[in-house]
Image 1 (cartoon, rainbow, N blue to C red):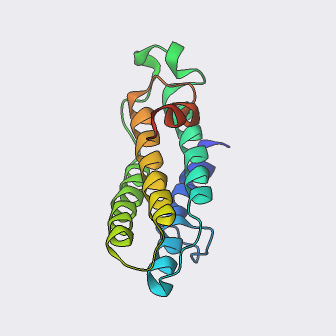
Image 2 (image 1 turned 120 degrees about the vertical axis):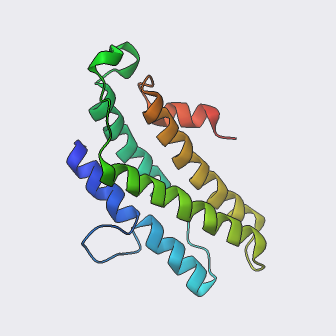
Length: 144
């Protein structure tokens, strides 16, 4: 996946794209969960976001970020990228807290939501660190 595609997908997941939202979008799926108070598996969408973050990582930090000189890494980030990821995290945390407080959701569903949001947060942190060759591998190592 190239950077423009990853950015467009992140904007879509965050509900910031010009296209109409669908159930394949993270933020819209959170809305559907809250509206219907019925859980929909969210981890596949978080996995798609992590795939986008892999592409963002290589765009900003080089093909092999761990071996790329810091001077060759992006020093500035695109505003739409930062806004999309921040929106995903802010909304994801809000809905995760809501699910934990709301009756009607199973503990495993609440945990899946918490882990999905945590995986996105960790992935973004590894992109910003700029020295991880595999965002998904790092997230899998650090996800509790």
